[in-house]
Image (cartoon, rainbow, N blue to C red; front, side):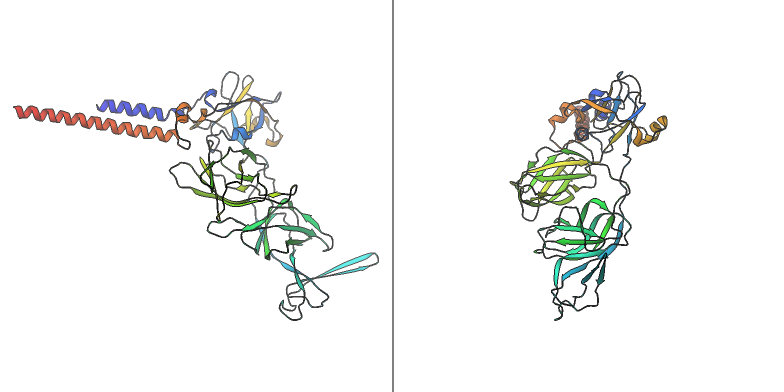
Length: 473
């Protein structure tokens, strides 16, 4: 009986580890494409499309292989794009100087900016006085009216800025739109494009954003910045800290649309995720005009785990036809999850919002060695597959060429085999979000318990038989 137990457990253990074989065939992968190498190239580079990103079954992209016409594995490496971004630094805090209308008074309010323009024939001069010693704002002599604008003196800032983190008070539960402009003389102003409004919602874990992102990095040296907002909004800006733009431009993210989410009541949508590619960002959008819904984004890797918070944002689409503004993607910090959930907060609902979701990924590039006969085949999408990639330096040293100067290969004839990467018929029979490996391990444990129970039962019968025989004697 012990021998039978050992045989059963070994067999079941072999079944649980069968997916970890080191030399899988191309037919075992869910996504396959013909890889066309440039004529005469020994090494070429190719980027993975969005359709491939949503088939990867390893967060480190271990389940990628390249085969030649003879079915032999071809050497390749995962290359980091040459324009990868570096960590951003912060500038000093720049105080905000409020702007006032004079209304024919010679006395400025405390903290106001006084601008004097003198023009003569063939010459002009601008005088700027930052008045900290003037009359108090509530003084009888102070009849100036504060404008919905502040001025920043950034003439000595040598770094390029990509965002402004405001120290400001503004109304809750609303979108506050700002405009930014720069000037060298305080007379002629150049608008600077901003990305999205600021918002602050009340309540525990409610979304908030106090960072104004610039559409393009900006060099403020020798210039003033003027920040303005809607006069109806009760905004008090005290200063800002700038985010220094990285020296290299970040590579463009790869975006893939997700299917419709599964509703859970009126306040949440859930997506089962069939890939392990880390999520750089999530773009939520609404096709319904005049929509504003604050949401939490959550994720987990198993249906038995609690949800964990990944990010917060506000889904909005506001403005007149042709001039609508909508929310940008929200960064998630590269988690790899099997379940994704969006929950409305602040008493709002998702019913009628017509919410669509798109996942954004950091781009993945491959360096491929043209070894063997063409055509070559790039395959990916297979669970529990060990990595076979080599270091990029091993391939670039062969051609003595910089990474960015390597020729590009192309992908054609893309084929998709659903669920092939996740265990075939057995995985398809399991509930979404349940890992086949977990099921197999539970089967091994249950089989072991049953076998041990059988052994115990047999031993008890033997003892009972012996006891009966002894009593007859």
